Structures are given as C-alpha cells and as structure tokens.
Picture 1: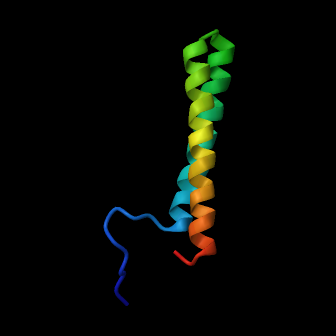
Picture 2 (picture 1 turned 45 degrees about the horizontal axis):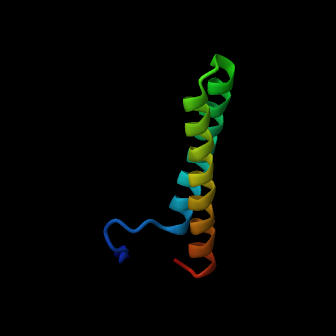
Length: 67
C-alpha cells in the first residue's frame, strides 16, 4: 500500500513522540541549568518544554481527526 502523506507533514504519532522528546530534553536542560546556576540554560529548558507540550497537543489533535 502506498503512503499518501505529503512531504514534510508529520503524522499525529510522530508529533506526539517528538513533543515528548522535546519536553524531556527541556526538563534535563532546566535541571542542569539550575544545578550549575545557568539562568540561560534553565530558561532554554523551560522554553523547550513548552514547545514540546505544544507539539504533543498538535499530535493529539491530528490523531483525533485521523491524520
């Protein structure tokens, strides 16, 4: 069976997995930033967590609509 997805468009599952990965990576960066006193790294980790959570929600929405 041929995959009819457009190039560059991720499936809902791919977005959910990528979002969870970014969220985890952000948590690690935030923790390391706190441990070494780097406000920049801590803020970057917090930002990455938010990005991951948003991407995960996009994946959940795609799955709900069958994408």
